[in-house]
Image 1 (cartoon, rainbow, N blue to C red):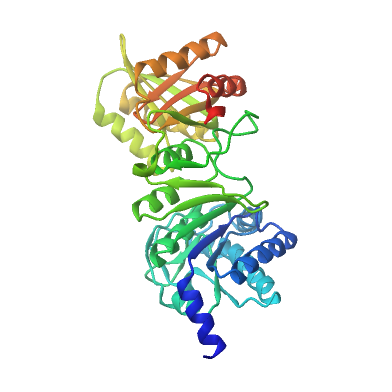
Image 2 (image 1 turned 90 degrees about the vertical axis):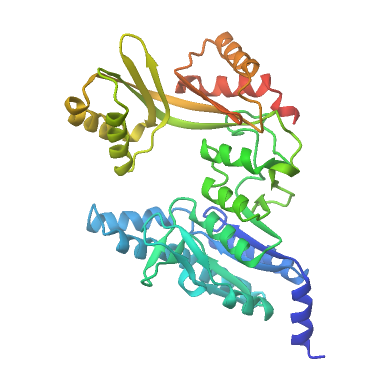
Length: 416
């Protein structure tokens, strides 16, 4: 039997992994060479692999800045054409590093793979992935090295997927190829109970449910983008977070029915640099509030932890990223008469601290414990929001470290 046929049959029987490497992981030639060595060893051990690369660390920001030197408001189509080139550098260098080691590899853009998206430039959504070409390469023993973060719209234009888009690319490829696992390689060894920079006792989780991981990601944990978590759960893609700098098992994201820590707090997510805006609604009208929040959404401004309380007038409060505060205040000023609202107040330098579990976090004893712990440390809660899976609190940013450490200890997260 010819050697090529033996190789093809052997590879067809082996497991398939889609492996995504982020900007820090491919941030230098030295890092690319180290990863190529790791990928080559896995290939020689019989693994089938599809590699997804982000742009080198800082490259996308450099390209955005270049566009800003030409015009402050670049055409979205042209900006996508510009910033998509960052990933092309990474994939070409990675393919060359693999080929140097005698490993057959081929770099591919999103267009060459045929990752089909809608036409929302800068925040496109993947609609379909063609796998014929990728499967042909895999059958030939060739490692596809795919550009993350990008695809093509129905007109053939280059589109980008927005922040965290390379994670989504990897999950979409894994789903389309029915991969055994999608592995996201980062600069940390997995998902931790909280940010180790805030709490040195933070522990790496061996596993976490998709529901909890989605909340952790949505509420500030940066290890995975929430869109990729939702996509993986929807298409039943096994997902794992690993370190590209050291070996280890990482953290497996489990389907909810396979996870056995129900009812417990499993992590604390943090989102810093927030502001809170409040105003009195002088005549109650949900329609008018709908107009306001629709306008903010059109401006690309995301609001969170909306609260409406009733005293002599209805007070509406919500949180936003502090960087959006000036624009929000200007918008409120322009619509204040139309909406018939009273004086607008705001607070800056706030942070959201969110306890995430798997169930039963809405129980009163959980909230009672949280307020007791924070009260003993003199930490005043500005806003609170709860659900069965999370309890989110807005507090002054200067109390962030003490709050996280106290809550981490109180809920025994270092014992998980």
